[in-house]
Length: 312
Image (cartoon, rainbow, N blue to C red; front, side, top):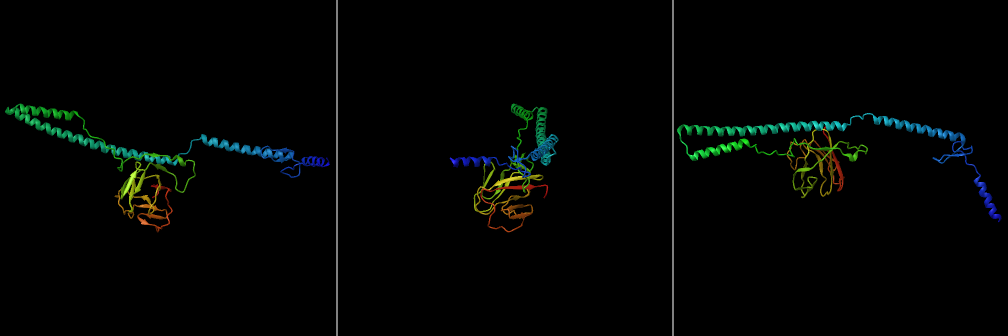
Protein backbone atom coordinates (compact mmCIF):
# COMPACT_ATOMS: atom_id res chain seq x y z
CA UNK A 1 0.00 0.00 0.00
CA UNK A 2 2.79 2.42 0.84
CA UNK A 3 4.69 1.43 -2.32
CA UNK A 4 1.75 2.27 -4.62
CA UNK A 5 1.24 5.65 -3.00
CA UNK A 6 4.91 6.46 -3.51
CA UNK A 7 4.67 5.64 -7.22
CA UNK A 8 1.64 7.86 -7.66
CA UNK A 9 3.38 10.75 -5.89
CA UNK A 10 6.47 10.42 -8.11
CA UNK A 11 4.39 10.33 -11.31
CA UNK A 12 2.44 13.41 -10.28
CA UNK A 13 5.64 15.32 -9.56
CA UNK A 14 7.22 14.42 -12.97
CA UNK A 15 4.14 15.62 -14.89
CA UNK A 16 4.27 19.03 -13.19
CA UNK A 17 7.84 19.80 -14.46
CA UNK A 18 7.69 22.81 -16.88
CA UNK A 19 9.33 22.63 -20.33
CA UNK A 20 11.63 25.52 -21.19
CA UNK A 21 11.19 27.76 -24.25
CA UNK A 22 13.25 26.48 -27.19
CA UNK A 23 14.48 30.04 -27.87
CA UNK A 24 15.43 31.51 -24.49
CA UNK A 25 15.84 28.27 -22.50
CA UNK A 26 14.60 30.00 -19.35
CA UNK A 27 11.02 31.07 -19.70
CA UNK A 28 8.30 28.53 -19.33
CA UNK A 29 7.05 27.10 -22.61
CA UNK A 30 3.34 27.68 -22.62
CA UNK A 31 2.66 27.35 -26.37
CA UNK A 32 3.44 24.44 -28.68
CA UNK A 33 3.69 24.91 -32.48
CA UNK A 34 1.72 22.20 -34.23
CA UNK A 35 4.12 22.34 -37.19
CA UNK A 36 7.57 22.00 -35.60
CA UNK A 37 6.25 20.60 -32.28
CA UNK A 38 8.47 22.94 -30.24
CA UNK A 39 7.52 24.90 -27.09
CA UNK A 40 7.82 28.67 -26.87
CA UNK A 41 7.24 31.37 -24.34
CA UNK A 42 4.74 34.11 -25.22
CA UNK A 43 7.40 36.45 -26.64
CA UNK A 44 9.17 33.91 -28.79
CA UNK A 45 5.95 32.27 -29.92
CA UNK A 46 4.89 35.63 -31.40
CA UNK A 47 8.32 35.96 -33.05
CA UNK A 48 8.03 32.39 -34.40
CA UNK A 49 4.68 33.24 -35.99
CA UNK A 50 6.17 36.40 -37.48
CA UNK A 51 9.01 34.33 -39.01
CA UNK A 52 6.45 31.97 -40.56
CA UNK A 53 4.50 34.94 -41.89
CA UNK A 54 7.66 36.37 -43.48
CA UNK A 55 8.49 33.01 -45.10
CA UNK A 56 4.91 32.80 -46.36
CA UNK A 57 5.26 36.26 -47.91
CA UNK A 58 8.49 35.18 -49.65
CA UNK A 59 6.79 32.09 -51.08
CA UNK A 60 3.94 34.28 -52.29
CA UNK A 61 6.41 36.61 -54.02
CA UNK A 62 8.15 33.68 -55.72
CA UNK A 63 4.76 32.36 -56.80
CA UNK A 64 3.70 35.71 -58.25
CA UNK A 65 7.07 36.09 -60.04
CA UNK A 66 6.76 32.67 -61.64
CA UNK A 67 3.14 33.35 -62.67
CA UNK A 68 4.29 36.61 -64.29
CA UNK A 69 7.16 34.92 -66.16
CA UNK A 70 4.85 32.11 -67.26
CA UNK A 71 2.32 34.57 -68.66
CA UNK A 72 4.98 36.34 -70.73
CA UNK A 73 6.00 35.11 -74.17
CA UNK A 74 8.69 32.47 -73.89
CA UNK A 75 12.06 33.17 -75.58
CA UNK A 76 12.61 31.43 -78.91
CA UNK A 77 14.05 27.97 -78.36
CA UNK A 78 17.36 27.29 -80.20
CA UNK A 79 15.94 24.06 -81.65
CA UNK A 80 13.33 26.12 -83.52
CA UNK A 81 16.17 27.68 -85.51
CA UNK A 82 17.49 24.20 -86.30
CA UNK A 83 14.02 23.14 -87.46
CA UNK A 84 13.73 26.28 -89.60
CA UNK A 85 17.07 25.49 -91.25
CA UNK A 86 15.98 21.89 -91.88
CA UNK A 87 12.72 23.17 -93.38
CA UNK A 88 14.46 25.60 -95.73
CA UNK A 89 17.03 23.02 -96.80
CA UNK A 90 14.26 20.48 -97.42
CA UNK A 91 12.22 23.01 -99.43
CA UNK A 92 15.27 23.84 -101.52
CA UNK A 93 15.95 20.15 -102.16
CA UNK A 94 12.30 19.61 -103.11
CA UNK A 95 12.30 22.59 -105.47
CA UNK A 96 15.53 21.51 -107.16
CA UNK A 97 14.36 17.92 -107.49
CA UNK A 98 10.93 19.00 -108.80
CA UNK A 99 12.54 21.31 -111.38
CA UNK A 100 14.81 18.50 -112.58
CA UNK A 101 11.82 16.15 -112.81
CA UNK A 102 9.85 18.75 -114.82
CA UNK A 103 12.80 19.25 -117.17
CA UNK A 104 13.21 15.49 -117.68
CA UNK A 105 9.50 15.05 -118.34
CA UNK A 106 9.36 18.00 -120.73
CA UNK A 107 12.36 16.63 -122.60
CA UNK A 108 10.58 13.29 -122.94
CA UNK A 109 7.39 14.98 -124.18
CA UNK A 110 9.33 17.04 -126.72
CA UNK A 111 11.18 13.98 -127.96
CA UNK A 112 7.90 12.06 -128.32
CA UNK A 113 6.34 14.93 -130.26
CA UNK A 114 9.39 15.18 -132.54
CA UNK A 115 9.18 11.46 -133.29
CA UNK A 116 5.48 11.82 -134.16
CA UNK A 117 6.26 14.77 -136.46
CA UNK A 118 8.87 12.68 -138.27
CA UNK A 119 6.36 9.83 -138.67
CA UNK A 120 3.57 12.08 -139.94
CA UNK A 121 5.95 13.86 -142.35
CA UNK A 122 6.98 10.52 -143.79
CA UNK A 123 3.34 9.47 -144.12
CA UNK A 124 2.47 12.79 -145.79
CA UNK A 125 5.20 12.26 -148.39
CA UNK A 126 3.98 8.75 -149.13
CA UNK A 127 0.34 9.86 -149.49
CA UNK A 128 1.17 12.77 -151.77
CA UNK A 129 3.43 10.66 -153.99
CA UNK A 130 0.93 7.83 -154.27
CA UNK A 131 -1.91 10.22 -155.07
CA UNK A 132 0.06 12.02 -157.77
CA UNK A 133 1.08 8.75 -159.41
CA UNK A 134 -2.25 7.08 -158.74
CA UNK A 135 -0.21 4.20 -157.42
CA UNK A 136 -1.85 2.54 -154.40
CA UNK A 137 -3.84 -0.55 -153.55
CA UNK A 138 -5.97 -1.84 -150.69
CA UNK A 139 -2.80 -2.97 -148.97
CA UNK A 140 -1.37 0.57 -149.03
CA UNK A 141 -4.66 2.07 -147.80
CA UNK A 142 -4.81 -0.40 -144.89
CA UNK A 143 -1.21 0.32 -143.99
CA UNK A 144 -1.73 4.09 -143.98
CA UNK A 145 -4.99 3.78 -142.06
CA UNK A 146 -3.32 1.66 -139.37
CA UNK A 147 -0.43 4.11 -139.19
CA UNK A 148 -2.84 7.01 -138.62
CA UNK A 149 -4.67 5.08 -135.91
CA UNK A 150 -1.34 4.28 -134.26
CA UNK A 151 -0.26 7.93 -134.33
CA UNK A 152 -3.65 9.08 -133.03
CA UNK A 153 -3.48 6.68 -130.08
CA UNK A 154 0.08 7.77 -129.32
CA UNK A 155 -0.99 11.44 -129.46
CA UNK A 156 -4.10 11.03 -127.28
CA UNK A 157 -2.47 8.78 -124.69
CA UNK A 158 -0.37 10.46 -121.96
CA UNK A 159 3.24 9.40 -121.72
CA UNK A 160 3.26 6.28 -119.57
CA UNK A 161 6.22 6.85 -117.29
CA UNK A 162 6.44 6.30 -113.55
CA UNK A 163 7.83 8.71 -110.98
CA UNK A 164 10.50 6.82 -109.08
CA UNK A 165 11.09 7.66 -105.41
CA UNK A 166 14.79 7.28 -104.68
CA UNK A 167 15.13 6.98 -100.92
CA UNK A 168 18.92 6.76 -101.03
CA UNK A 169 19.79 9.79 -103.16
CA UNK A 170 21.73 12.73 -101.79
CA UNK A 171 18.70 14.99 -102.22
CA UNK A 172 16.30 12.82 -100.22
CA UNK A 173 14.40 14.47 -97.37
CA UNK A 174 14.79 12.92 -93.92
CA UNK A 175 12.11 13.27 -91.27
CA UNK A 176 13.00 14.74 -87.88
CA UNK A 177 11.43 14.43 -84.44
CA UNK A 178 11.98 15.86 -80.97
CA UNK A 179 13.40 13.42 -78.42
CA UNK A 180 10.92 13.96 -75.56
CA UNK A 181 12.53 11.34 -73.30
CA UNK A 182 15.25 13.79 -72.22
CA UNK A 183 13.02 16.86 -71.73
CA UNK A 184 13.21 16.86 -67.91
CA UNK A 185 16.78 15.62 -67.63
CA UNK A 186 19.75 17.92 -66.98
CA UNK A 187 22.04 18.61 -69.97
CA UNK A 188 24.76 16.00 -70.38
CA UNK A 189 28.25 16.35 -71.74
CA UNK A 190 27.00 14.97 -75.03
CA UNK A 191 24.69 17.96 -75.58
CA UNK A 192 21.17 17.97 -76.97
CA UNK A 193 19.90 18.17 -80.51
CA UNK A 194 17.45 16.77 -82.99
CA UNK A 195 17.32 13.02 -82.98
CA UNK A 196 16.71 11.46 -86.38
CA UNK A 197 15.35 8.10 -87.36
CA UNK A 198 18.44 6.35 -88.69
CA UNK A 199 18.68 3.06 -90.54
CA UNK A 200 21.58 0.90 -91.62
CA UNK A 201 21.86 0.84 -95.41
CA UNK A 202 25.05 0.25 -97.40
CA UNK A 203 27.74 -2.14 -96.18
CA UNK A 204 30.98 -3.78 -97.21
CA UNK A 205 31.85 -7.27 -95.97
CA UNK A 206 29.91 -10.19 -94.55
CA UNK A 207 26.97 -8.32 -93.03
CA UNK A 208 23.28 -9.08 -92.49
CA UNK A 209 20.93 -6.10 -92.04
CA UNK A 210 17.51 -6.88 -90.52
CA UNK A 211 14.53 -5.31 -88.74
CA UNK A 212 14.06 -2.77 -91.55
CA UNK A 213 17.59 -1.45 -91.18
CA UNK A 214 17.56 -1.16 -87.37
CA UNK A 215 19.95 -4.09 -86.75
CA UNK A 216 23.25 -5.02 -88.43
CA UNK A 217 25.36 -8.09 -87.71
CA UNK A 218 28.85 -8.99 -88.88
CA UNK A 219 28.68 -12.66 -89.86
CA UNK A 220 32.41 -13.33 -90.35
CA UNK A 221 35.69 -12.98 -88.54
CA UNK A 222 36.89 -10.17 -90.81
CA UNK A 223 36.17 -6.46 -90.50
CA UNK A 224 33.19 -4.89 -92.24
CA UNK A 225 31.91 -1.38 -92.91
CA UNK A 226 28.27 -0.29 -92.51
CA UNK A 227 26.77 3.10 -93.37
CA UNK A 228 23.48 4.67 -92.30
CA UNK A 229 20.98 6.28 -94.67
CA UNK A 230 21.06 9.92 -93.59
CA UNK A 231 23.52 12.60 -94.64
CA UNK A 232 24.30 15.66 -92.52
CA UNK A 233 25.54 19.11 -93.48
CA UNK A 234 24.22 21.44 -90.74
CA UNK A 235 22.87 21.38 -87.20
CA UNK A 236 23.50 19.02 -84.29
CA UNK A 237 22.32 15.43 -84.60
CA UNK A 238 22.29 12.43 -82.28
CA UNK A 239 22.44 8.78 -83.34
CA UNK A 240 21.87 6.13 -80.68
CA UNK A 241 23.54 2.73 -81.00
CA UNK A 242 23.23 -0.39 -78.84
CA UNK A 243 25.84 -3.15 -78.82
CA UNK A 244 23.82 -6.36 -78.71
CA UNK A 245 26.81 -8.66 -79.08
CA UNK A 246 30.51 -7.95 -79.22
CA UNK A 247 32.87 -10.72 -80.26
CA UNK A 248 36.14 -9.35 -81.54
CA UNK A 249 37.40 -5.77 -81.47
CA UNK A 250 35.33 -2.74 -80.49
CA UNK A 251 33.26 -1.03 -83.21
CA UNK A 252 34.49 2.17 -84.80
CA UNK A 253 31.70 4.76 -84.71
CA UNK A 254 32.13 7.88 -86.78
CA UNK A 255 31.50 9.80 -89.99
CA UNK A 256 32.82 9.83 -93.55
CA UNK A 257 32.15 12.02 -96.57
CA UNK A 258 29.17 10.91 -98.67
CA UNK A 259 31.36 11.35 -101.75
CA UNK A 260 33.59 8.45 -100.72
CA UNK A 261 32.90 4.93 -101.91
CA UNK A 262 32.36 2.38 -99.16
CA UNK A 263 35.46 0.23 -98.76
CA UNK A 264 37.01 -1.90 -96.06
CA UNK A 265 40.17 0.13 -95.41
CA UNK A 266 38.82 3.65 -95.76
CA UNK A 267 39.43 4.81 -92.17
CA UNK A 268 42.62 6.57 -93.31
CA UNK A 269 40.75 8.97 -95.59
CA UNK A 270 40.85 12.67 -94.54
CA UNK A 271 37.07 12.79 -94.12
CA UNK A 272 36.99 9.97 -91.52
CA UNK A 273 36.42 11.01 -87.89
CA UNK A 274 35.28 8.79 -85.04
CA UNK A 275 36.10 6.65 -82.03
CA UNK A 276 36.79 3.00 -81.30
CA UNK A 277 36.19 2.07 -77.66
CA UNK A 278 36.12 5.82 -76.81
CA UNK A 279 39.87 5.91 -75.97
CA UNK A 280 41.00 5.36 -79.57
CA UNK A 281 40.11 8.30 -81.80
CA UNK A 282 40.39 8.85 -85.56
CA UNK A 283 40.72 12.52 -86.59
CA UNK A 284 40.83 13.34 -90.29
CA UNK A 285 41.89 9.77 -91.00
CA UNK A 286 44.76 9.76 -88.50
CA UNK A 287 44.92 7.72 -85.29
CA UNK A 288 44.98 9.72 -82.05
CA UNK A 289 45.97 7.00 -79.62
CA UNK A 290 46.79 3.35 -79.16
CA UNK A 291 44.08 0.73 -79.35
CA UNK A 292 44.32 -1.49 -76.26
CA UNK A 293 42.66 -4.80 -75.49
CA UNK A 294 41.00 -3.52 -72.31
CA UNK A 295 37.67 -2.63 -73.86
CA UNK A 296 35.44 0.07 -72.38
CA UNK A 297 32.44 -0.64 -74.60
CA UNK A 298 30.82 -3.94 -73.68
CA UNK A 299 27.85 -6.01 -74.82
CA UNK A 300 24.58 -4.28 -73.87
CA UNK A 301 26.05 -0.77 -73.79
CA UNK A 302 24.22 2.11 -75.46
CA UNK A 303 26.26 4.78 -77.25
CA UNK A 304 25.12 8.16 -78.59
CA UNK A 305 27.11 9.55 -81.51
CA UNK A 306 26.73 13.36 -81.66
CA UNK A 307 27.38 15.01 -85.02
CA UNK A 308 27.86 18.78 -84.70
CA UNK A 309 28.00 20.12 -88.26
CA UNK A 310 28.08 23.75 -87.07
CA UNK A 311 31.42 23.37 -85.24
CA UNK A 312 33.69 21.32 -87.44
